[in-house]
Length: 180
Image 1 (spheres, rainbow, N blue to C red):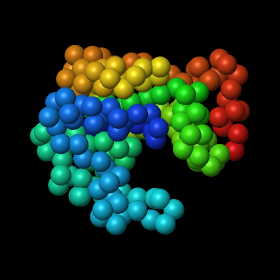
Image 2 (cartoon, one colour):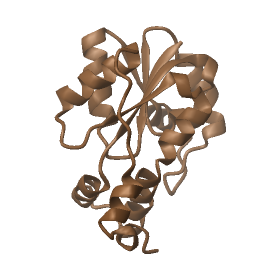
Image 3 (cartoon, rainbow, N blue to C red):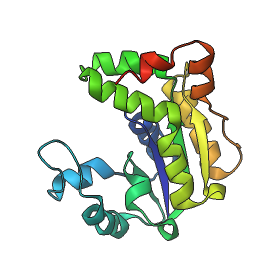
């Protein structure tokens, strides 16, 4: 059984996974890299998750850490010992997406998904609530986020409660993030 680090694009999941892999001696498997090498990425960047599933499942085993936003859609619960969902404030993510030069529509799609907790909910649905913890990386450096993720995967950290929708609503920014 494998460990999983997942989350929306830009939250820091690859940085966290690389640190965890080095620290714990785990082989890090990048779901996006597997999809790319297997020729499963379409012209617009979409991934054939049904064909990715057997590729990832064949690589996932004890001593591996699968990282990527596609993990909840491509790995069966039986292949996953524990999962951590890295979360980040949409206010921080806006800057990340601007730095990556995401088109506004792509940025809003990803921001909306993070605000609504789509990947977190899908991870719970895919792997079971007992196996999944959230770590809020907002304002935290990579080392701190990785340390919390490690503890969450070990079961010694209950994880963070994350509710970006309440925060965005309280600030009056719902239209800002859901304008299209």
